[in-house]
Length: 385
Image (cartoon, rainbow, N blue to C red; front, side, top):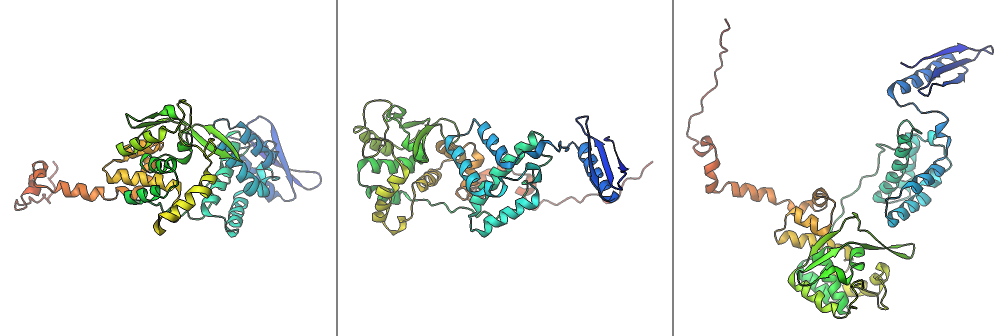
């Protein structure tokens, strides 16, 4: 139990003191005794609940602490680091940068969220900024600089479910036919039937392609960060094997005739032979091709082909585990959360199969023959001796 007391000073003011977990005595002076009592009660309660923070510990500004936090994160991808920098620079530091850690409270965080909302920032971007802020403050809690995270459970704008676009096989073929070169035609089919992310497709090397087995080894990804191209691990930091339909593998085999024999050669390249850049490909090739393909494909993006892969696989009878492995999701829960509607018909189909006459062997007799009388339960309790 923490100890503390209040004493009246010679000048008529009241000084409250208590002993902290560090063994030192801490105090504060007030004009009114009731204010001193209120403060002392709060500090003693924090000590007893294990939420006490040394008043000298949180004097560092949020901006300085955020720099330390980001510098200490050594296991994140360069693109993720750049994303954090962007959020801090544009959305977080203008409000919290010069503020002391211990001065940030729930009201300040709530006011900041309302300002972002009034600025017409998208709900997803607001949530990203809040997640970054909350992660920094949570780290400060872990280091004993804060007693609690003031950003936890903040009220955030509702995030609408994204509407995924799914192409049919006919639409995929039409989009591929509208591409200007064999490379781009092959690229569309690999994205739509392999489910690769754009960065994984751009980083695919010849030595990772097995046409005979119809397999691709996905081991790295290409990201563009502030104009620089950076090769790194995949989004989940895991490697996986992607399988292709025979006709796509055959198409890819013909395309490899135009690729250098070096195992490290990139399978898909820019016109001058370097790595594909997403923005350049969208502007110079993709947008014009989708316009030629038809009005129903006028707003299709390369990432929509990844969703299309999930839809085509599901239509072919693939279960959630197979789709997860093909797309490289961290676990099957991510797949289910992303493509819930693709599996909505399963339960009804299962119930229909259970109603098949052959299932009668496993039904209780009572269900098989509804004419059996129902034996009532006794209503009189047995007499106790």
